[in-house]
Image (cartoon, rainbow, N blue to C red; front, side, top):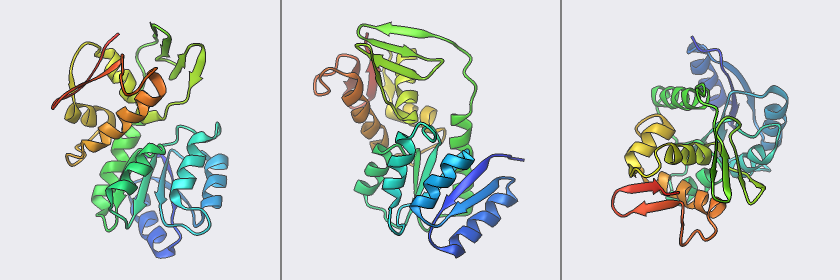
Length: 230
């Protein structure tokens, strides 16, 4: 059985009760909040292993909550799955760019949600079996500490961005397909939404490349995927 603590953030009590029942039935510990401010407070105090975050919240929406959680030293790195009734691609892209680990549209099956939770937790809590610092020109990547610096300045990467960068670097010189990256970084079949990879790669390039329009590290292989070139 699972022992991980999950923070549910939703302003509708009946949804909280439904999720709480099913999560506890699967062995998870559950805490919940009904506002964005309360969610940030609980995330800071209780340090949950994962956050289920509704987008449509009073006072502060889920996007702002996600942004606040990811930029705070006390809460950065906590995986977030965003829940919403919206299904538009722009909403998905915004959530992912703000650091969400996954995005699921209501209505969804509890079975699917549990599978996604397990996948995100499995990926985020897997043990690192290598301790390595790589120097790639003006880019230094500390695999063990999950830190990246460029020209001596630390670059703030989301967990997804770091995992993508790490996977590309470990396989540098090899062309990695979008489906491969989806499977390895997200931990499950992401319903063919390779746009997810493209969004994260674009954001990653903006942070690690001198000129993200003419990248020297992360190369696009048209129609296939990406490869890291040092």
